Length: 325
Length: 282
Image 1: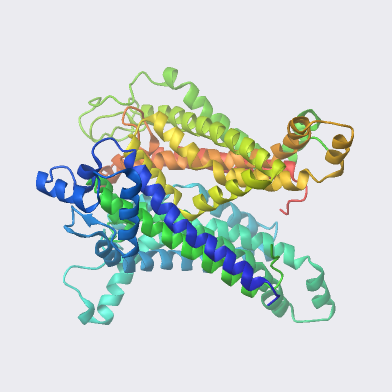
Image 2: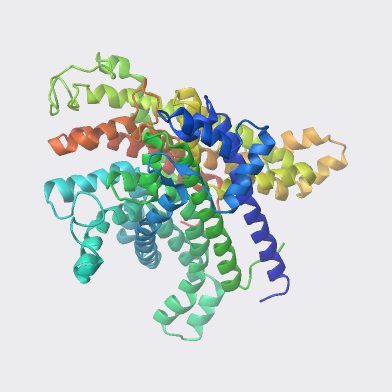
């Protein structure tokens, strides 16, 4: 690893983490722009006057704005994201409960998209300008242009309503639990299929296009020509040399995709009633549960920030050519 | 060095880029239906009760009706206007802001540049869609608010692209040459640097347009669109119940229109890239 890399990464990481308080302060002021009494917004419409007063006291909402901000920040640093009046529980608990299911869904979707995307991208690059290449490129472009709320509904129409191959909604059949072992896992997988495929299909085009471009670039570069001249096995050249270099940009894009796919997760979870953080966002919106909505917003922002840092670090480690500033 | 549109031979350009040709054909079709909506149907897209319940497509209702008796054809072709209005206005605002900020930050550097970089860092750290949802709830789901919110939360990443371009362009010889002969900073910025930022901006604008169509539709799908305007997203929300009663037409037609529009604009971006950047690998 070249000298200075550590300093560079440290600087990037510090800047990224400084974004966390920035996000919180931003959210704080955004809520102040909402019409109405912030104490009522935080307590929920229809809350008793006593509860509204209690919220006003705890958050110091009758104090000057800068004091309010300090109270709000200090609460957050102790992990107190507020109280969700729809769930009658602490916001942080409600969110944490939903995280595993969202990770499962988004992770499976990304995994399918990346592996299928790389496979099709390599295929398109090898068969450049043939029928196969054209079919792959145009199909993925169409999937790239379909909004997920249309695509997911087509999947529901064909695989749930017409053929009943996959279940309608939820993440597991009623009555099954961890104690059912393999049956439980298979059942969750069966429920997971359609939402994960929806998420995968809309992301796939990016990976196909990226792999295809960088593979073509790699295949015509000097080191590959040299490898061919040395008489290396063509399969070995393809996978060991060309693909390896072509994969680098994929890592960066996968990191960026995480921020972009959150909107898709919200919509997919809504359509398939998948009880994750995305569905929770919509529940918070429908109930105008501001503490919960702010909590989700801060939580997803922190996830994106962490993903950006991890992407930076991974990328710097695997690509020795990364230029430092 | 400057891009002159008059230098581009249109016939040759179209032959070179199939994407561009296909995109223009698709866009012309969609635009025609949107522009002619008033002549093509006499039904009010938002009016309920044209039929009793879901009606499959027939000669009276080309795309059928939804469960409240709204005409899907009228909704869909008036929806073209909504989608294009939102995307064109918000993209204009976004790109104009991004070019101005990026140009000044990149050209002068220093503190303003640092500030721009931190602002873009900030916007890259937060999930834009959730932020947009949050803002729409707070300010209210009117068409104007949606357009403004889209622009406010979209310009930073484009400004960053402009800045990066400006940084390389301002060191080029022809720019230094005009500085030597005494051109002012504003002269250089707008006459030498800006014209060379335009080609990459055209591609970014096209992508911004398709993104705006998708975000508006997604908001409407989630019930956060302007209720007084026919949006493809809202018809797709209506389809959520309708498809269970056999009403596939409420899903198919609006989905087709939104996909074709977004596809056409994405192809336009691809085509522009082919034409403006001769080094593109295809």
